[in-house]
Length: 310
Image 1 (cartoon, rainbow, N blue to C red):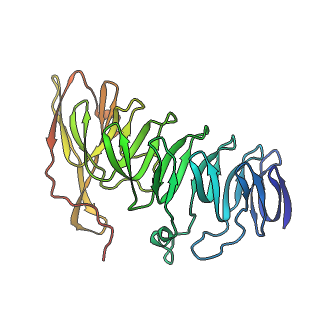
Image 2: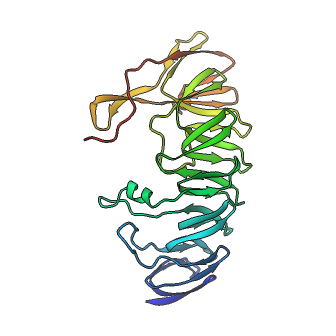
Image 3: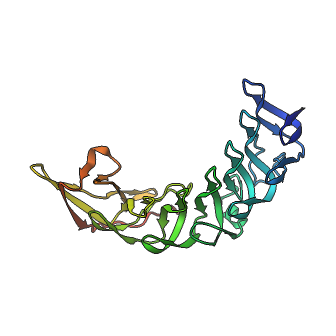
């Protein structure tokens, strides 16, 4: 084991390290307590896994100029961020030194430790946001280099009530912002009707991405107009002059636990200036001005996805 010098202080008990071509440390693993003095206070990098809920010891990583890129902390530590004091077990940084992502917990999911075990350790966190003060159990927060809040990722079952260009909406999974503070995307807790350039569409994604809240099914332009949504309730009949009409609609698939339960596959509808695109496929792009769109209500004999196979 060796000692490595960093701009935050010396690291002792270094068991492993890799180097950039300029000789500076790329990443290293420590096996004894160390204290790094950072703009966010004194941080103690993880040097041991205290229980089966923590991941095995993670290396800390640095940028070529020696500034921190990511660090797993030995114990949960309160960090002062642009949105308030946030508890952290894992933090990543932008090159300019500002916080990029912060995770309040950094557990290891396994057959012995489920997300429910991890969730039981989560506390309500109150923080500032472009839509006001919010409180929820958070998986993580993401920031722009400027320090502006970029996205919020919620634990399953957690919701936020926020004011959007569509009115007051209960949000699940995630909420994302433009650097200006305008809402970029959100995941609604229940079906909502949204006015679009082709009519009012019921928006709902029955299987949204739950990994992070950076990209959600309802996506807005910075001016608040609808940019994209997912629907399991509407089909769109498209007619272009002198061409055969096409019907775009949500799909159907078997539930993960068997074919006795059918679930819908949401149809993505995206709007870009004077164009509309279906299924995120450029081949299915139509000019709003020269195309006729007819919304049709779907009546599929489908159910919500179920993930318990017992």
